[in-house]
Image (cartoon, rainbow, N blue to C red; front, side, top):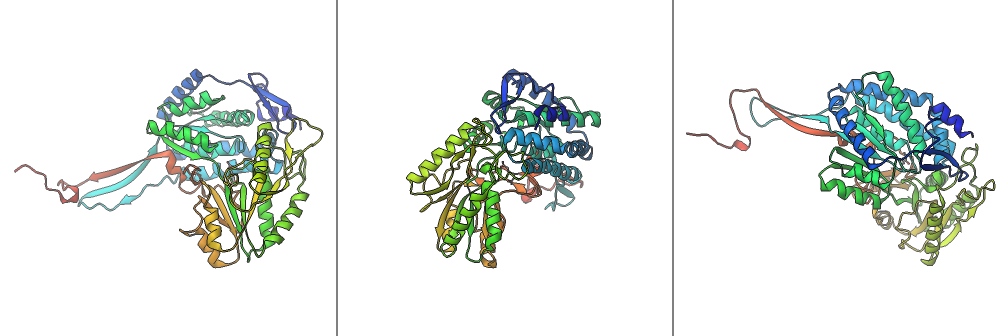
Length: 499
Ligand code: UN1
């Protein structure tokens, strides 16, 4: 696929040619573009503009704000193929998933447009006569979005589409590994802004750079909301920095997602779901399936069938139709995978697959076989998130033990159970079931729809993005009590008057 044709389609041909940051495609390791990074002083200017834009944008009626997001959605529909291909080229995910990522952006735009007419508050019964109590939701300020390489544009859209209809301005720092897709989306956004007509200047901006740029965004008190996606280590630093100044942080960090295969499971369905969740995106989703607990009565059969399926996974150029698994993002990801497999072996694991393989003779493309690792239990390496296609498989005897094992990880993003037993299914999603932000029955842990709130507990960070009422995270709440009587009764019946 010709990168410059995609750049031309997306209107970034002239932006992707010069600068200090080299962008390599994981498909071949070749440089596909160069972009310019920004200094901390540029971030300062972006924040100043963004804050000034917020002060105007907050007074634009929300349904009108929704119109901007509608225009963005239109452009995404129009350029879905080109943008999806660029996602593939820049991240190495297969084209189907690249297109799926853009579809996710379109879907959240549609959701946010509807939401722009539904930013409801409650009215609350006042205990005082002649008083009305209500909740209003107001725009918050600048929303900084820090996104990761693996969903280089969808994660921005879950945040930006909501933030914009909620009346916030947006500053985006994409991963340094994937700035081209960010430039392309920003270009589509600039076009939407031009058609919209009277949006304040600086409403939606992009800053490209490394840790210093991120640190400046996070520490600056003009950033009202920091929505950060990435590792738990990154989230810990961001969370503390934002808390220190009492800002708001929406953290979407790692996952070490579990799945349970029970004796009554529809095995065909479970195997397909496991394959997609563990192997899809080369195991580089925060929702990827990493730990599988299989009942001892179906263990041998499940494992041998998984081995057969794993051996058949077409690994190769992610742009070729038929490929189901592309490369890892870079050499470091491949080294981490190999180190984890060695560690797993040292901890008693039996590894099948996991070898680095050559595709099209590309020495700088990091293609690997997906790995299945039969483990005696949840050892240290099993409880560590490795961002790679490694699935640890363990045996369980009773269902409570399997739930406890699922909840034994320090992360709490996603989880699933495969069962046709109603009691097990309900138990898994109950208060004493999975402790994750996402708990599924008879589907894998990955591939969530945008309509639900996305995020998880514990070391996943607790943030929620995307659907349901996640929009509340992008607004401030005011409780308003209006006295329309001529008396002044005090709450709690307090008597406070001069004689
Ligand atoms: C991520 O990996 O950071 O649920 C997000 C899913 C996708 C999003 C994953 N909709 O797998």
